[in-house]
Image 1 (cartoon, rainbow, N blue to C red):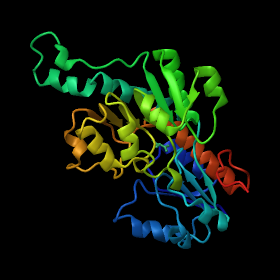
Image 2: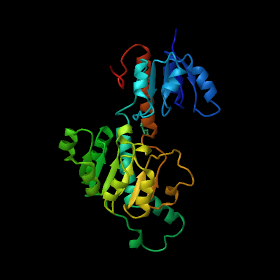
Image 3: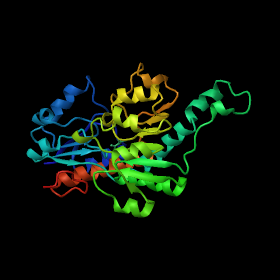
Image 4: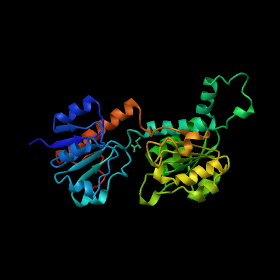
Length: 321
Ligand code: DGY
């Protein structure tokens, strides 16, 4: 019998067609109050799940007794309770590598946007306020030749370091669970404690994955250590930062600005303090969101899913035992 899989995120028709060669496919463009009852009913005999962001924990696993694999269309997998999945023999997979360059591009873009005040000055021009040559009140700060501190020197962190070192002549500091010999050799990156990184970096880029150990990794203490001219960029997950502490640090001029792709609550509420801060550049969790990369991620995730259901080892298996 063909396995049944549920795709709970909108995917290109080519992805659904690929899956249909091997599986019976049930598609949900999104999960919300309206679609959840149908989704739960379909889960009862589903063997595979493909999508991103859905919390997979014991409660959901209880509803899915036949589940064999959950394939995330993302590199981050903080939505997966891996021990719970492993204890039931359910495979977990993600999509590393294919998005590293795309996410790194956005992080550099956020650094530039905040330092050179691009969104703010775009609004200034479009509001008809540009009447004379730009005066010092509109000046930004340089990115090139500054010190960049990268927290989380995995594949994405290394792709950021590569751009910063080769493209912007930046001096690279990093903090990570373990040393990254390649980054040290290729980009002259210096390993430091988190405190030293916060003290010495002009730009601080947070890329550490969200785990129980990295919740609120950057909070009051770290913002106080940063230079008053520091620009903080977050491309990991909102929960790795104490957001209230970040708001306070920005308001009180403890740091110069922030570029944020991720937030504690997504989508960001209309009344959130960031909405009115000219020194904060926000984007709606688009780190990997280019047409090409999202396609590659969906292809990778679909391959992981099919291989897992065929009894093979998916290339991006997270719970190898
Ligand atoms: C990921 O893949 O985890 C990214 O956050 C998606 O943009």
